[in-house]
Length: 324
Image (cartoon, rainbow, N blue to C red; front, side, top):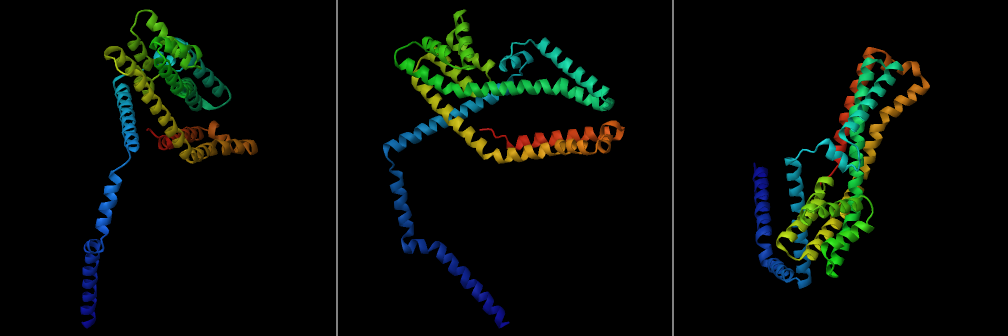
């Protein structure tokens, strides 16, 4: 009984001492006054630092508006096949694309069926070659074109800013970019010039850049030009802020790519192991593994494995892709 009383007394004294240490020690030792003094000193920042912080906040607002506009455009508008072909830089018609896709699907179906792959395997690979492969290639070409466009856009905006500050009209500055810029930026600015030449206002011609290049940066460029054409304003300052935002987004994308490279390498290794092991087993003992595409049960198992592997690859890709 005495031990319990001593234990409770010790715990009570410890609790009271802890509360006193937390609440009374900062007041008695002067630590709270020191914190207040440090806070008052930190408030009086230099004017240059305050201007840098204000400039950063403006750039953050611009980036936020870019993301909001892009999300709203993607929600309200469904992209047709013809527009997707234009965005990928292909001069094909939708009919030609569908014909090529059908030919690839039929060729894959006939090849697999004649090689003894079975009806189910031939249908699966024919569907993948006719429906999945062309659209994957189309998406790859579109992303590569957008990447090249973003790489050259900040320098093009800087050229326009320098031209405006030197006294050139906006249209002449765009002509300079169209003459010297690399592809695909050159063709896009030439399209702006040709659209304006047939009578469309320059602001609307620049706004249509987003239809051919669905990027928030291209959309904001068109919005800045359209607003300046309607209400005026300091266009060189607005485009200068846009150039800084573009370069900051490029640095962020490169940083994200470097940080996610380990996960991408792991996903690539995990996704490529089953086909590699299957190929090596086929080289060593073809009769052992050929049951997968000759026996109906093996064909069903093979189709299931392909489906589950595709789902796993898509999940890993979703996990390592970052939006910013």
